[in-house]
Image (cartoon, rainbow, N blue to C red; front, side, top):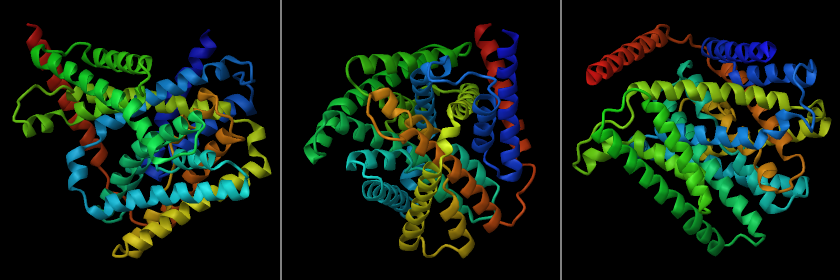
Length: 423
């Protein structure tokens, strides 16, 4: 028993060290965490990862849990009003890169691998977006223009949602076993997504009502997280899309104050600063263990010549999609900024979670998970090398410590406020 807790503790320490290494050297923590898991499982055999092992059997649950946390966090961080005010080129570039990536991957898998077009589209949507958790931290350490950093922040935030929503639509099309037409897609949107959006709005209204009437300080985050899990289960039980419901719930809470002002209604902030800090901790915990878990599930068989070649080819296609999109839309950017934008393509948690879709839905796609994991690994390597090659400026120091001090002050204020309210 003590042995397992030692591994858990080491995993958290490795996750923390990887985040520090990421901030200082731009080496993606995804690579470090997956490598650590790979050492624990396939290489050293410390943890059993055979087909009949517990690690493999709990994959659907772990993937679903990670998806719930990812979607809720993504909704909370998605500032609708900021995105609405963003430069039109940013939004256009994001959509162009995503659509070009999906199209190129789909064409490649159909022509080179002989896949059905729907399976190619599914792979394209899963690996079509960059990771906000990796990109936002990485670009903060570069010397590119502020406008370019904003563009990449918009892209990384949008594509998490784009990948998840588009992949879910493709899954429903495959399960329906019909040719994808506008009528089929519209029916999926009206059935599953309408239910999900309605449930998400209802849950957000309930939570805003609770926080507006009662001072929820002690255990407020845990109560909110409980509502997230209940919302997911309730939506899925009536054949809705639980993931989208959770995303809508987080979206409303993250933008509640601004939405209230727009509707000329004043209410208490439904998500305090303390709750947001707890959410960051939970997201760190889930992200760390999930990427280590992915490393555990990697097999030496994944690194066959064919898998490696196809994975690298897919990363090459994703680079081409970014190159074409920026040539069409971002011609005014400086040369260095354009090169950083082109190589800033790390895939992360969203792709890793969505890689389990065929297993959890019963869709049979040859080497799907292996290819997605390969793309995650090689895209992070490409982003790290690209940042080193094209960005030479030393990052400003001190920002992180100032931010941490501000966060600590906010937590103390929240704690004092909670004590006063209980008195």
